[in-house]
Picture 1 (cartoon, rainbow, N blue to C red):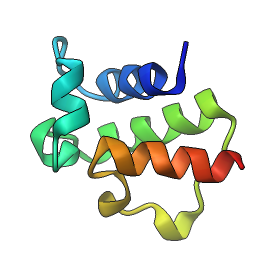
Picture 2: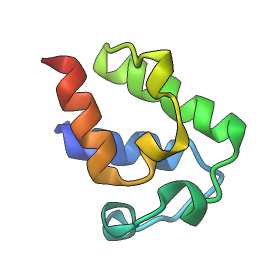
Picture 3: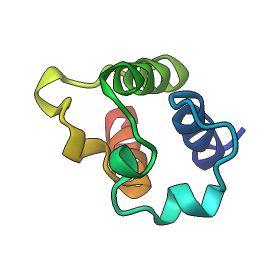
Length: 82
């Protein structure tokens, strides 16, 4: 599975939502609010990303703004993998 699809899969699995369109996730300007991601969902998102991509997200960037858009999440993973 490519990185884009894997990120989308993790985002969807981190919410209570069953049917979320890929375009909605990619184009959202505020994923946390749009998907109603609470603190437990947020932790699930972080753990899912770390386990799937074999990365460790530094504590100092574990803030909502870092994960507000698909592009920010994708860029973060790419940066941490390099």
